[in-house]
Each structure stands twice: as C-alpha cells, then as structure tokens.
Image: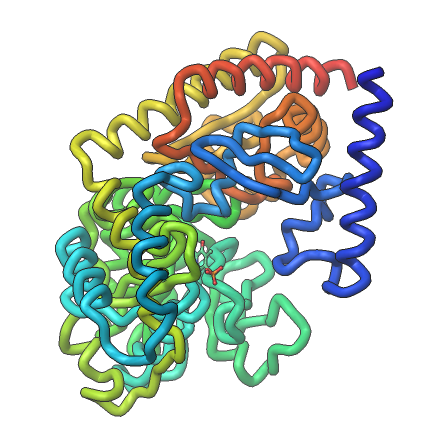
Length: 438
Ligand SMILES: *Cc1c(COP(=O)(O)O)cnc(C)c1O
C-alpha cells in the first residue's frame, strides 16, 4: 500500500517536472533547484509555514534551505504576512519615494553601523554588480579581486574563478562572458594570507576593490581564519582599495549586524539581500557616505531600478528586521543550530561516518570529510559527494529537506523547535546507517 502511494506521488511530481521542462530551461528558474547533482525529481512546493515546507503531493518536510537564506524567521511568519497584506491594499508600486524606504534605510544604518547611506535594489546580484561599479568609479581603477569558491551573483565581472594556484588572470566560469571582462577579475584562494600580501605588494595600487563573503557560504560553509579579514582590511586601507563585504547571505543571519559584527572588521561597502527582503526580491548596498555619494543623482555613477524600494518588499523586510532584533534572537538561533550539529556529529560517529561541521547563528556547514576543519575551496572539493548523495535522499525520504548540493550552506530559522531538531537528528542517524550500508 505505502509503496503504491509513494510511486504515485513520484509519478505526479515527475509529470509536473516534465511539463516544466517543456517551457522552462531545465524546468527550473535557478539551476540548483533541478536536483542535477543529487539525481531524482525536484519537489514542487505548494506552501510553507514555520520550519516546514509542503509539496504538491502534500508531503511535509522540515526545511533547512529556507528559500536559500531569506526565511530567518521561518516561513509565512504571521506578522510579516499581515504587514505585506496591509501594505498591498494601498497599491503595489509607485516609482516614487515612500516613507517605507526611509524606514528601511534607517533600520539598516542602525543595525549595521558601517553603513551610513544605503541604496535598495531587487536582488543580491544587482547589489554586488552595483557595488563593483561604484568601487571602480570611485577609485578610477578597473581591476577587482575575488576569492575562489565565493559567489557574488551572476554578473559578468563576478562569475569568474581561477583554477588552482595563487594569482591567475580571470577565466570566466561560464560561456557568454568576454575574456576582456574577466581579465579584470583577479582571484585568490580564500584564507591564504600570504598570497594576499604578495598580490597587494605587486598590484594593490591598481585594485579598485576586494569583494569577499566574510564567511563563505557558497562553497558549503567556510569561516575566515583568525586575523584574515583584519589583514584584508589593513591592506585595502593602505592601498586605497575599497573593501566590499558581500553579506547577502550572512547579513542579519550569523549575527544581527552580520559577519562584520561577529569578527569586528569594518568594510567600506556592504552588500545585502536574502533576509533583508523577508522572502520578497530585495537587495541593497551601502557603506561610507563619501563613496555612496558618488552614485547618481548626487554623483556621476549610474545605478537605477524600476521596482527598487518596492513598498511590498520593504514592508516584508522591515517587519523581518524588527522581529530579528528581539533580545537573544541570534544567541538562541546559534544554540539551535549547535544542537543540530552536535546531534549529527554524535550520530555520524556512532555509525563510523566521518563528518566535519561548523556554524554561526542560523547558518551551518556539514562536510563528509575526515578533516578537523575545512578552511578553503580545495578541501571542500575533496569531500565525499557520494556520501552526500545518499545522505540527501535518505533525509528527503524521511521528511527533511536539505539543499540538493554538497556545496551549499544549511539554514536554520527561529521557527525550528527542539522537536524538529531531534526529529532531524534521528533521520540523520538512519541516513548515516544507509551510507555505511551502501
Ligand atoms: C545569494 C547570493 C548572492 C546573489 O543574490 P541573488 O538575490 O540570488 O541575486 C550574492 N552574494 C551572495 C554571498 C549570495 O549568497
């Protein structure tokens, strides 16, 4: 009986996916959603509430993707939904200033003190792309530096990573990016302080900016080594290079004031997204007033957006920022995430499967690796993806929804209860057993 039910479900999801693939490239509007690296059919989601998502077959999952970061409060938080509903009654978009935008900017400047002035846009990609243009316009320099394994959205200048090795001229990660653009994007290994110093020594004075995820969350979860961000700050200051922290993922999530609060290092410009929209399409970039004033209309550097500062998006974001400002919000979240990983580690060791974990606030990494600590891209690439695949599908079958890729960070929310965590750990125990049995 249950196997019939489960295969019927599988067929229904498969039919939807087939329909999708006829009219959408790969059946999805963002590539990782297609389950390409884990195999199987993606779940089509019908609704979500708190820590759970429910698919079109009415199967419920404990969710650790959280829409890839935005859902820090959990899904469909009643106060956020009420706020969006109320604002929607007044019209969806005006293309003129609103009080909500001012309120949003004031909140951001209060929560992230390095931001003196902030411009809203509609995605993280737009935020980082605009921040790069701003840094180039401000410094009059063309070259930028990014780090291997860091993702900053899909704009041309940023969709570049080097092969291995210290300094390499940029090689595009995707067809469609002219080599002439990519050559201005230098890349280094994340956490390699020596290579960083050498690069700055040689060409620091021609670098418009350095852009970095202060905790790398797009190659699983890699923390900066002690002192690394401080060195980066010191080198940028010395060479007149704009330091951009891309906190699209870490902002408001690893700590209220983001990774810059956690590590006590102050960037010149910060890019934000994900949590700041509470589930609506939002991005933002802001920082030093003298730099931000170079943007039109106060300055000559052009940046604009038809839907920038959209009132519905602002209302979801403002409510989210207000709620995450509650006392102990982030310490409680950090404890929840720690409880999850402690449980996973103990189950993994019980079954003799080597894993390595790390976490900050509502964000975590889980690596199938014997390493004590993962500190860079090469180590991430050496993790056991076969183990991950088995783990992923075993968890999915048990009602736990993880990112369908070994290279993504996991996300917890304020809605995850101790019972959710315990249920997840129990499922993980069976999944580790499945790995051992495979
Ligand atoms: C998600 C992400 C982006 C891109 O944001 P989009 O809203 O997907 O365009 C940029 N930088 C980082 C660090 C991200 O995690």
